[in-house]
Image 1: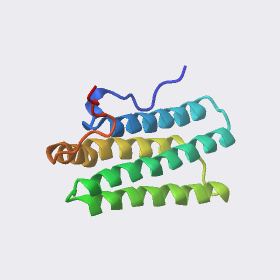
Image 2: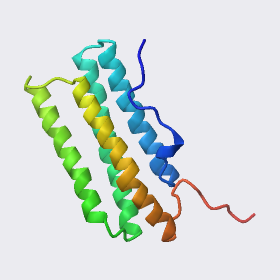
Image 3: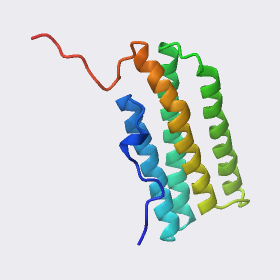
Amino acid sequence: MTTELFHWTDEFGVGIQEIDEQHKELVDLLNQLHTAIQEHHGSETSRKILDKLADYTRTHFAVEESLMRVSNYPDFEMHKQNHEDLIGQVQALQEKLDNGQAAITFELLHFLKVWLMRHINEADKRFGVHFMAHGGEDPMVRPRRAP
């Protein structure tokens, strides 16, 4: 029987529906990777999931950074640097996987889980508060049109 690596609860919400939905997708991909390793689906399957996770992470970071720019988020540069650091670490891992110098392990999963949990609970929640306090509108909430 497999267990979830990361169980999403509403406590991880940052107050911006689009960002929360993207975080849930990241958690789901991390859990898919965990399941693939637990159930020995093979390195090719695990690698495909890791690549999807990396691609989706880039997309998510671009959305977050866009919202930070439009709301003049004061910690934008530091937050963006955190994003770039993680992308760099994942790219280095992908290169090591390609060269046979690394494997996707439970330690890697633990690192990604801890990074994501901390990043959501600290940096992203701070941004969520700023965004909503500065007139930011949730991009998922569409204004009603007059009849």
